[in-house]
Image (spheres, rainbow, N blue to C red):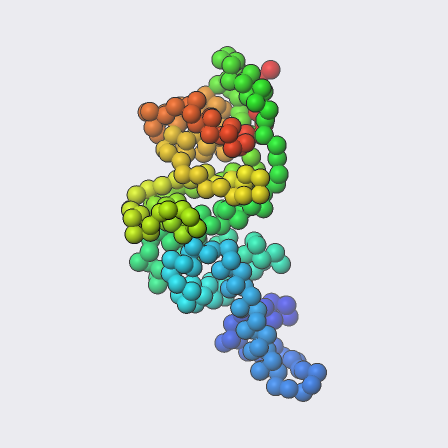
Length: 256
């Protein structure tokens, strides 16, 4: 075991022994100084998680969240110095965390918040010009083979719970009362960045299926078929209007 790994374990786990050779410049008690440093490290990591998952924290309360986050940090220490990347495994951790079992939607709310962070930090890209999209849509022969390139920030969330409404109910000015949310209702959302703002757009079954296909680089004709299978009332024109309006199509590959 490397000295670096030993130090990392000692910083995150108070049950670990003090690393050998530890000393202080002023001859104070090394164990006490390590405890102070350990506390500072843990507080910083938990604070970073609280900033990434504010609604998750609100749903369980600060005390519960911080206790859970400490267990998570010890089980999943940071692998990068970029704290914005720390938290990838938290939704999965919550899903298996016994004290949170009474809130089956909590892991998906955390997933939504994580995806918002990924959308925020995604690369910039310009949308396809409307004239180019119009020309492609008008070419009935080649259109089924077109493969649209989605915006780098575009994320898709599917949940058996009303996580979009739960998240929205905790946003200022949403007008949604949390007690009115039917958490047992399944919801899906497109998550993306529009300018400097990260958007969470609730999506019906057809738009969800279409977006999933486009993210998987499926040809447009097959993507439409999959959307119709998910929702027989699916309207391709309306769905494309949503994607175009939000600048979520940045390119297209099609047979020459």
